[in-house]
Length: 202
Image (cartoon, rainbow, N blue to C red; front, side):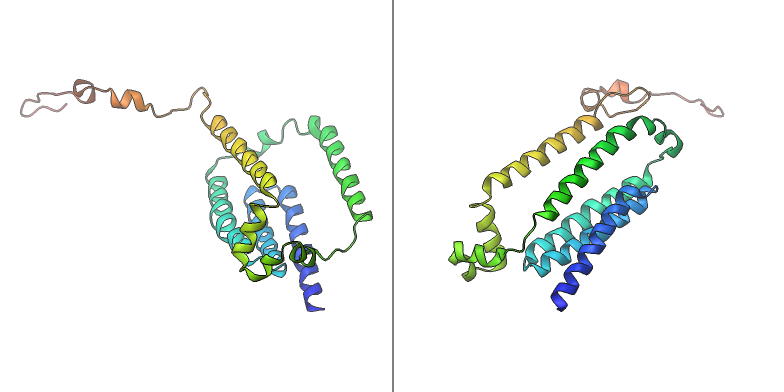
């Protein structure tokens, strides 16, 4: 009874936090709701018996990614009026994607049935019951789900490359560091020697 109550509590707060992330007008509030969603997702992982995944979720995502994202958002000078311009032209496409997602979620909900996942996994791989949480997770990831794990890594790699390309693109009026110019700079270009006579300024 307590297990079921905790599950629904964590799940409802996670869904509510995820909705507030995309509906909050203030980006800082969105990041704070994202942190709340991460904490409740970690609670769900603890209920599933995956303490290692819950710890990684809190340490990596909450402790590094979300907090860093919050500081970046707070330091940016965002013009919200300029940001909201042209929002109406994307409304039909966004509504279509939302309807498709709602239909998919409804189909999953109608065809959902409770399955003893932990029992099936333990039966399929009896050695997992003799391992600790971290070893069992690694054994499942690198044997049964190795292709999905590699696919997730490739998606993250593409996202990282895309972020780097967007950051380093050439934009007018933005000053950037030129490493080659700094390395090849001569002593004569670095400073000028000026003789100042007594009683005179520069």
